[in-house]
Length: 142
Image (tube, rainbow, N blue to C red; front, side):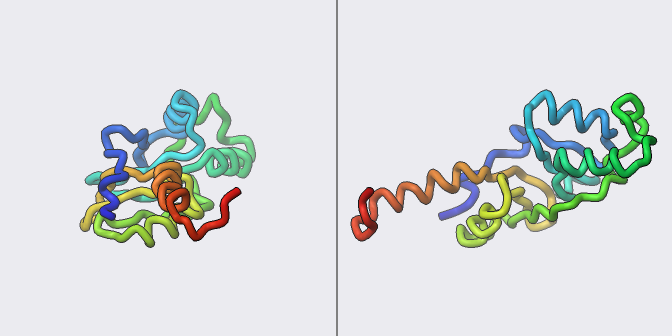
């Protein structure tokens, strides 16, 4: 199955840029109630995914320099990302997508130039797999 079938396109995904301030990032995440969002670089290239934890650890380790009041003076590009949320190519197969989704709530999807084109949510993959499990007569019934 083509993973484009599951793609939530870039226009429908909440993202931030490397140039976003910490305050902009925090407010965007809070407004949309997300715990992680993709980061885009110049030309729409996927750079990584920032999590609430990344922001909190950055603020904690700043020795009081970064507070919510001063967060607009600091840029996201300076925040170390604790987790490497790997993207998948739009040409990848379902096995690659499933392997990444085991460890991530969503899988970023990129084109052959590394440009971000959307995400696939783990819930969509589980729903897809569920169809096979519920149809397989060899599996034990509960």
